[in-house]
Length: 132
Image (cartoon, rainbow, N blue to C red; front, side, top):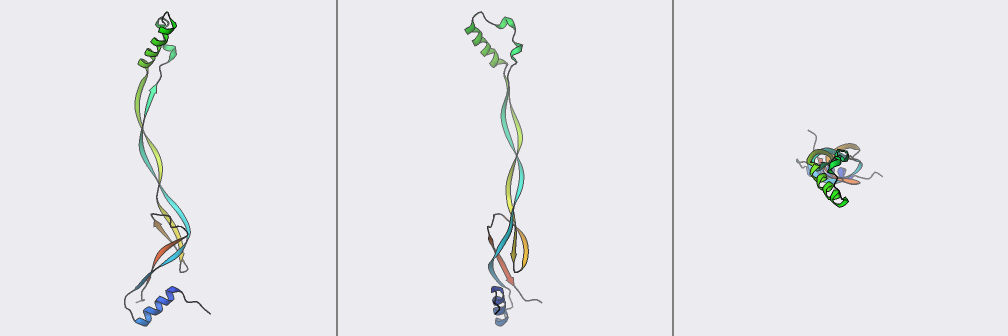
């Protein structure tokens, strides 16, 4: 014995009642595949870059007579010779902008773009209308 599908029942109701307008209802279709749609966006990132002075550039006469004074003097010279600047670079970041969903309903396979991952099944609108 053949089982009657929901679409066939609605079609039968439409034919019997003589409705001239289309019949629409919502059903669920199994999802066959979901692929994220990825877009690369470039965002500015600013970082501070400092160049350290070269220790070989010190002149011998800069060295003080005591170790403590030499350390203090060299620390001051080191800070004075240190050069810093801000550098802005473009960094690529990937963002999911949607999902390409392949589903099957009524023996037909179709693909739709959705803003979310529907999971194992997705709602579909089914429209029944007479052929002219």
